[in-house]
Image (cartoon, rainbow, N blue to C red; front, side, top):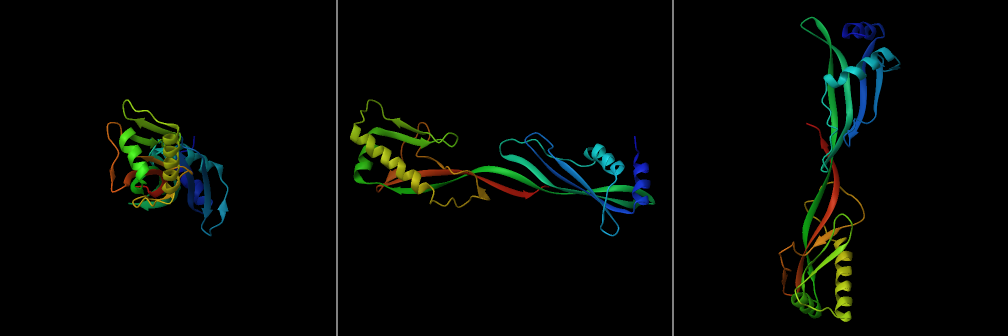
Length: 217
């Protein structure tokens, strides 16, 4: 097995200036890596002794964050390896530059105008209704001992469709990055909470997932 001193000698013999490792990791996996060697004139050099050595040893020198948690997705970038001298000793230095990838749900409250008929129906018979973030299903929580007529069911379904349509035009002010997917979820009150209606305006919380990156610390 090649030692660092062996690789330093090969490095010098081939006039190598730097080795650049490209990587992408996440989903609990390191993913693909690629090593490119450059000589002092910027030309690419092929040398498996050097690249194999770094591929076996770089994880002792550099921390990579491949474990995802649903919010942090992973990171990608480069590690630049150079030969430096310090106190008369030659050794390799490793400079990592990477972007961390995140997926996060952002929300905002939309004011939705209701008709008098809709206000009456909601106040009398509906506790709340929500559209799931995960399966796009709409769940309606009715008040106890209420009976929904066919006409009221049509009114409610039309109302939900209008909220779904308007949700796509609603700007979530604090959202960062690029929106993920083509669906938005909404809720008009969590379990145990009633509807928030005032002056024929329904408060609807709109949520969506966004993808963004930032420099890795």
